[in-house]
Each structure stands twice: as C-alpha cells, then as structure tokens.
Image (cartoon, rainbow, N blue to C red):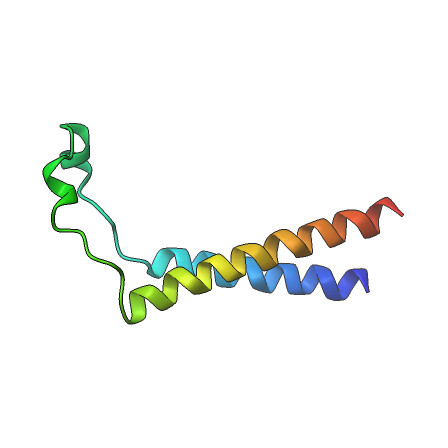
Length: 77
C-alpha cells in the first residue's frame, strides 16, 4: 500500500510541475514594481485552456496534499 501511494505521489508531483510550467505569465514584473494600478484594468476571467490549467492545478494540488498526508500517516504506524 505504501509503495503504491508513493508512486502515485511521484506521478502527481511530476504532473503538477508540468501544469505549473504550462501556465502563462499573469503580469509584467516591471509594472508590478511601480504600483501596477493600471495593470488591473485589462484583466479578464480565464477561459478555455487557461481555465482548465487553473482547475487541474488546484485539483492536483489537493491530491498531492492528501497523498502526502496519507503517506505520513502510514509511515508513522
């Protein structure tokens, strides 16, 4: 059981890394240093593939956390 959860945790970790790398940059770093007030005007809600990436990252993050807790519980026994 422990080995299966450990393998699942590694697979989820790799997928989570790939999803984070695939996400586009949200803002320009130089504009955030100077206040970034004008940057907020053109923001729109994520749609399509970008929305999918955000939801998938959230789900995989939750799964990663749950698997890590399960492994910690099993290793404590």
